Image (cartoon, rainbow, N blue to C red):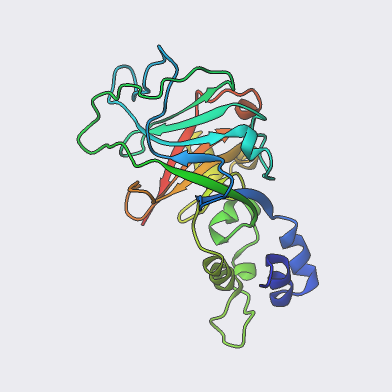
Length: 267
């Protein structure tokens, strides 16, 4: 199987290929674990919160959130990514059914958890999803045309003809390679999918900045994709969308998960 670097070097001259490859970021791809695979977390089930810890809700006394996923940080430490994950403990991911609000809870490794934690009354649209284990692998991720607010390569670069036909342009050939590798996925770190705009740019937009504003690039660079979830296991995010949990680098370094930024990209 052709690896990503070889593929890019076949399509682009060296003076373009090498700077582009320098932009790649490692990420942890998550998939439903098969028999015998090492598990690093799970989708769905009950969160098994410690005794006395309230189930997350939207706002002050708002509707209960759906529990989406759990990640074992010690297990993830065996895989390379571009973000500063905790070396131990557990991360629990919650979001409202429409994904306009989200919460991430970090539990220490010695937390005593309640297996059959009582489920609160959920909104009619929300549900408890089946529990399935997750396996992991390290993969390369790369910017696409949707990330150009961040990498500023320009249309001339993305529209460069790299095949035998005039419609075989670099951006589309990259998309073909990604599809051959399995397409969209659950993922920790790396470049998230940018169906409209990347999470880094959207977070900067939310701070009132636009791509040509002073400070836009600096603000965008402070954000990372903590977890991307694709539609799977009964989870639906908009219309064929993905849910991204963004977080500032400084808050991640401080293990402060109180202000994650949920972002849904769909059609």
